[in-house]
Every structure is written in C-alpha cells, then in structure tokens.
Length: 501
Image 1 (tube, rainbow, N blue to C red):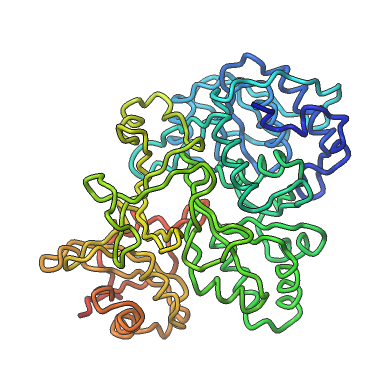
Image 2 (image 1 turned 180 degrees about the vertical axis):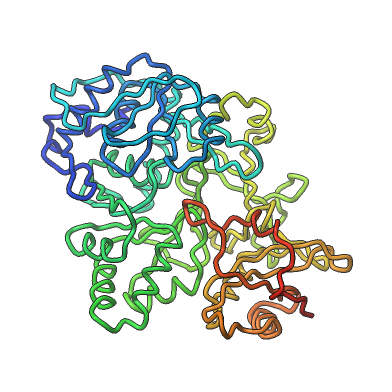
C-alpha cells in the first residue's frame, strides 16, 4: 500500500511550498505540516491511542496527521460533549494522552490524563516514517449514540484510502482543487472527507471556523474550487440568494456559479433548496451517502446527472443491495413502491466497534454485508434515494411502507413551511399515522392542517398525507444539522396540533 498521505512523505517535494491547510489567518504549507506533524509523531510513537481535542484549528490537523504518521489510532473528541458522554468515550477508548491546541480550555477529565499541547510551528526535518499496515486502526470515531452510549467505530487506513480514492474517481478530485468548508473535525465528514481528502490529493483546504455565507462567497471568489456542506448550510445559502437580486445575493451567486463542485452530505438536502440554488446560480448541488462505519457508499459523479433527491450510485469498489425485513434481497429493487434497507460491503468498511464484539456481530450479516439501518428506493439507472432511517423514518400506515423523506420534501415545497420533519405514531386503525412537525414561515399565520394534508396528497398520494400536524418554533438538531427525530417522538400533542383526515 502506498502512503495514506503521500504529499507528507517528503517535505521537500514539489508540493512543499503549497498551502495545505488554512484556518482564518493561520495557514500551513505542506513543508510546515510535514515538519510539525513529524515532530509530534516521533513524540507519540508507541503511545497506544491518543485523544484529540478536535477544534476547527490547525492544531487539530497537526495532531491527527501526526497520529496517522506514527501509526497511533486517534480518537477525535467533540469539544461540546457533555460530562457523561466525554467520560464514556475516554473510559471506552483509554487514550494515553490528549492532544490539544495551546489555547484550548479543557474540562476536568474523568480520570488522570496527560495533556500535550500541539506545536504547529515545530522545527526539524519532518522525517520519512514507515507506513503502517493497511488494516491497522487509523481513527476511532464515536457514533452519535441515539440508541445508547456512543460506540467507537474503528476505521482502518485501508477504509480511509479506499473511500478517498473512490471519491477521486467520482469527483475528478485533483491536487489543483481547493476545498472550502466549515464542518466539525470530530466527524468523518469534516475530518476524513474535508481534511484528509485534500491532503491525500496534495490539494488545499480552507476552513472557515464558523460557517457564514460571506465566508463561502469570499473563499470561492478567491480560488477555492469545491464546497462541502450540510443541508442547514445550503439552506442558509439559498435564503441569501433569494430571488438573486441585491449585492449580497449577486456576489454569492457568482461565487457559487464559479465553483467546480458543490457537495452536500450528512443528511438529505431538501429538493426546494436544490432548486433555489440552481435557479440563482445555474449550478446543481450534488449529494453523497455515507456513515461513520462505512465512510462513503454512493455519490453523484462530477460528470453525472445531479438529480435532486438522490445520492447517486455506488462508488467504485462498493457493493450495495436493498433487502426486505427478513434480510432477503428485494426481488425487483427498481419496481415502483419498492423500499428496502441498504446493506453494503467493500474496502470502505470499518473493522468493528471498539470493545463491542456483540454490536459488531449484530451489524453484519453472515456473508459480510453491513446493515446500515437506512431505507431507500432505487431508480432504474441505479441512483439511490434515501427515504430515512429504518427505526425512525419508515412509516407503515394502512398497509403501505412510506418513507418520511418524500413527505418532508413535499411539505417544504409549500410556501408556508420553513422547516419540516415527519414521524410515525401508533394508530389503532392504520397501524401508524403520519405526523408532520412544522416550523411555519410566518408563525402568526401558519398553514392549516387541512391545507398541508391536501398539499401532500396532491403532490404524492392520498395515503401519504399527514394525519396530524404539530407546530414548533424550531426543529431539534445535532452538531451536523441533522434533525433529532427521537426528541420529536418524545413530545406529546401540543396545543397547536390536531388530527386531520
């Protein structure tokens, strides 16, 4: 196997003077990143595991790259983790040290744990370090823990390399690309795709620190070629673009139109935001689908059709199938109304959950397919349409299997709806009834329940209309902008909700 980060194997090579990473005014060339990470790698070699206080800074990049070069598994920590979650992760992963930026303020650790500050200006020759085995653990990334304590997904070097190389093939990603994003560095989206992705190609990444439409416009107008974001970010871009008039909208539209690739991930991008951005810029956002445990599974190709509501076909090397509830493959996955759970296998998969052989065994079929828990339909040409999570987004109502995603898109197409989420609730007649959680565009004059039900029935089918509508001021979201539907499911009927027929 070649080096995971070949541009860092020789700090004096052709990429030495090229900017590798930039966080605000702080940037590091490949030569500087090679030296700083090499010095830290020598220090942590043989450390077992290291935790990384994953702030959106150059210190985090140096720490993770140093761990990769030393062959030491890195455990990214969310700086916003609560006391109980942090204690669980540190107890489960048992790192020997936590790496942090010199100015980072860390909370009291649940057990004695050495802290080493990362020196991004270290000197030395950077060294050429031996490349660890492809199967050796590179990262241990903890899942969100929606069904229990977070589990540590062990990601080998092989999986990272395979996913990034498959994206290189799909997106024609080269060392000439400059990526801009504002994603957290404790998730695979921001850390693996958004940071290690450019570094593996010998390209550059500019991190905004905090997302802003002004920052996106500035960086895309000054040489950045790619934008990675989550739906919340693209929604804000669409809101500023509006009808395309005004100096801010015009400047943003021009900057987005000049990008080579606009990519959305981590959750489904609503169709109406797709259309608003395309109308204002002439450019389509493309989507991809992945998980912590699998990294990237599918993606719309740079030379493919950017079809709203889809996440493209399987990436190179990835096997994908849709299965019934009993685990048998769908007889005709492209048939109208066919919905199945996605199972995948390939070199992109993790090796298992740390200290959880039971959970690891349950996640895989006997013949090696990973059970994603995501439900999807398949277009005739192989494009995948995610309809939601099996546990929260597949609604069985009146004998039909209904995906929450398409109803959410239909609701968002109503001018009176700003945000929407759809869940199912027990119903004595239907089995489950469809519940819409709506943030109205105008809280003083929300659309009526009957109006929304008729709107969905007209766009989709009568059996897909919401039977209950509940109004909220905001939807609960996590750090990546994903709607936390389990929080919605725990809410009782509000005073502003009633059942419709």
